[in-house]
Amino acid sequence: MEDAAAWARLRERLLARGRMPALPQGWRHQSAMLSAAGYAYGGDFIVGDLQESGTRLRTVLVDVCGSGETAVPAALQFAGALESLIGAVPGADLLRDANAYLLRQPSEEAIATAVQLDLDLATGAYLIRSAGHPPALVWSAAERTWRVDNARGTALGVSETPEVHESSGLLGPGDALMFYTDGVVESRSVDIDAGIVWLQETARAAYLAGWEGTARRIIDRVDRGDDDRAVLVLARC
Image (cartoon, rainbow, N blue to C red; front, side):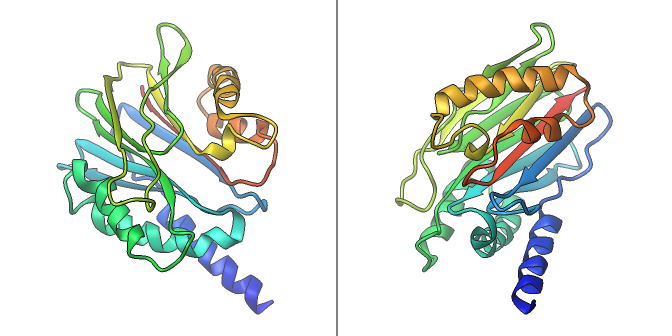
C-alpha cells in the first residue's frame, strides 16, 4: 500500500506539471494521456509556457524511455528541468540544453524524444523543433485533412550532438496542430508509417465530430500496448 501511495503521489506531481497554460481568445487546446499500465500518467508529459506578455506560446511534448510507472520518476525529474529551462533559454537552445541535462543523469533510461512548438499567438506563425519525435500533424481547415509535418530528428540523451529538425508554417483561422507520442502510432504489429496513416484518418473523423473531446476520442481508439500514449491538439479559432 505504501508503494502504491508513493507512485500515486509521483503521478499527481507529474499531472500537475503537465497542464498547459490558458490561452488568449482565439486559441484553444486539449490533451489526453494514458500510460501503458492504464494510469493517468506514465513517461509522456507536456511542459508549456506563455511568454512575451502572453503573445507567444512555447510548449514541449516529451516521451521518456520506458512506460507506465517505471518511467514516472525519470519523467518527473526531466519535467522539472524543462520547467526551469523553458523560460530561461532561447528557443533554439532548449532541446540541446535538455539533451545536456539527460547526458548528466546516471540512469540508463535517461533517453527521451521531444517536440517543441514556438507559436506566435498574434500572427499564427509557428516553428516546430523535433528530436526523435513522430512528426506533427497539421490540420487544414480548407482541405479538412491532417497533413504530415516533416520534422523528426534524433532522440535526446544519446549523443552530445543530437539532430534537431525544424519546420515552420502559419496557422489561419480553423487550422490546428497535433502532437503525439509513438505509443499512439507504433506497436509490435504496426510500424510507425502505417500508424501515422491510421492516425490521419482517425484524427480526421475525431476532429470533424466536434472540438470537445477530440484528443480523448483519438486515445480511446488506440489499442492498449506496451507504451504510453499522449495527444495534444492546439487550434486557432
